[in-house]
Image 1: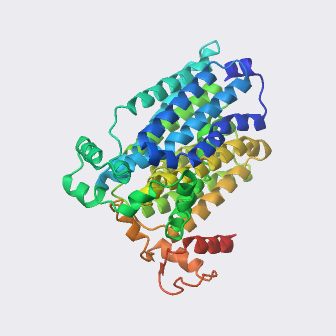
Image 2: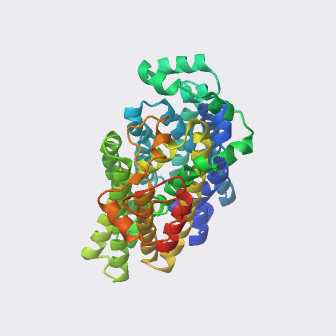
Image 3: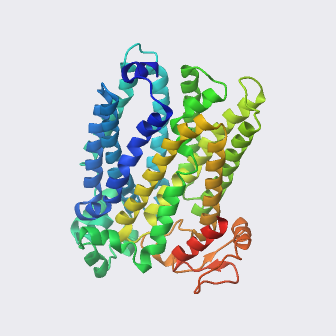
Length: 471
């Protein structure tokens, strides 16, 4: 906004990327360490701490009189996000009945896109204010929403699974009653906790972080890291954060036009996210990954080709191809990878490693998110098409790896998902073709070299082999 430039001065592409990405990088370290406190003090207590930190950060940004204070505010806000985002999904997975876990765990993403859409239109309206309040107002609204999240943490029921792992059975039963979970499911899954799992919850802080790399959990930890890290490297944050810039490069030069086009993109994302959330438990997790990967990589390559061929001008059909592709990319991501990544990483670990593993994976997601936000304006300043080919290639590589090594977990109780990872991964359709494409890769001993299944016990070694072949 011109009003922001009047307060802070002109900002170079590199400094702009750092300012935007600071909130993601700041979330990486707190997210990494948020798992063990969530096990010890409860999921909601950690979410409340994160929400409080975000309130402080939003207020610092809203009141900033210098870029240094503004970036400091983004660091506090990012730390808050790092603390509460990963644990929030763990909490939702743990309070959800198995048949509705996908839909309920999709709610944070659905409300995120609702907020994103609201943010675009808030900026579209506030840019007309002839003072610094044009950019301060959105941050004040952020502070209000974060304060509401902080207050709600003291009203919601705690996770009954978390309480059981702490040995607090009576409180867990009371939480189950508040949540309305059916007694049959509660007795079969939630209240059926082994003593050894309870004892593992009372380990030291750093032992909680080390245990997720034990042999029986390592493959799932790597899978969670990969899916939460790589779904960000498809370039979605470059599209979301710099949408007005991208639309301007495609032929919509005015700030108001850029915000309006971004707002329309936000509306379309919301409209596609609603049925995606409802259908989260109808389609398999693998289906979402494969469909999304094909769409995202194809659209990125299409936009890169258009710019490389110099077919995008202020007039003509080329710019509309790019504009429509940006809309389609945002919608494709929102309907597929945005949901499945967060759900999958939160549900594949047993209770005593779930919070720590998801927190570490979320930390990597913050780092890759920050990398995309940091390099996008720099890449756009250097070349018109480089960023699109880069993100398209990363999307396609993610599609291949997940199609080969991602077991299906839809509809499985959290306590039964562990059995899924002890079975061979059955490949069908496009996955079988991908497997045949890379079947000549060196496969470590202990894995099947014939047929259409891959044992998951040593997923980490097989994953490294496949990545080496693709590279």
